[in-house]
Image: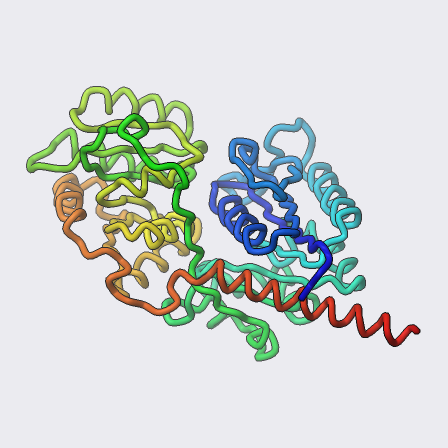
Length: 405
């Protein structure tokens, strides 16, 4: 058994949205639950990471935030300095943190070399030290042709070949394989582990009518994730309730922290005028709301999809199609597998279509009725793989010690 106190460092660039942060947090919490002596440190650029609670032995270092402009360029989120200066500060913090923390395992979320290559130097340094390097990829990254071009432009392929020891894919190959069609070699495929999706943790506190929007009455939960690109979805749902031509369950809409304040104010004013519609700006505790809902309406981001599976709720997805094809690919593959239903954003703002979809939603089959094996094994598989890595490192250290005597 691995007897020392393992340390895992997780990097997440977090330029936009909640997905990366919530995924890394879920992995960190699962690791410390499975290993009583482990410590996990998260490097993040999320401006709202402080809004979330973290378990004992999980902490974070926040690097200066950046945001992506409509033209695809990045700019500093808060500091009045140019992006090159911001990136230099971020890279320095990341490298110094890794040096001092001295992890056994370094997990990089999504970007093989980090945002604009900011973790390349850290990866190379840790590689020389013998740290086990892991790239974590969600089940769907983008259209394969687009991803191939992106990885070629960012020169990510050599990192996959030469730096990383493992590539963890947080999904099932039977649903979608993000490496297919992007031109990776067989040696890269040999590093791939398809973990299954990441199960959301059940809330420890029992829900009570005081914490739910409609007391004990059933409702539909509407969540556009971070909310930065969810204006059309929320508008479409509210239009359906404003024009209600048939009975619908009440709706709770959680707007998300990245929706612009003007849109938030407009939606809250509209909801005040509609029976059985309530709006929250943001909550870091979605689990009780998901557990109590009779159905979920979302956009199709990775974490929303995992929550739908974890709480086994009938779901309607209205996926975005720009700037990435990720959500539409995931939604259509999930619909093909019988896990949920999809309403294309191209149909917005057809009110009758949305009313019909909302009326049917609570009667849909729950996703786990499909019986897909290993669907939610992601965290268990990650815990097991980390234990394997740590055991191997311990055995190597013991062998070196014996050989040196």
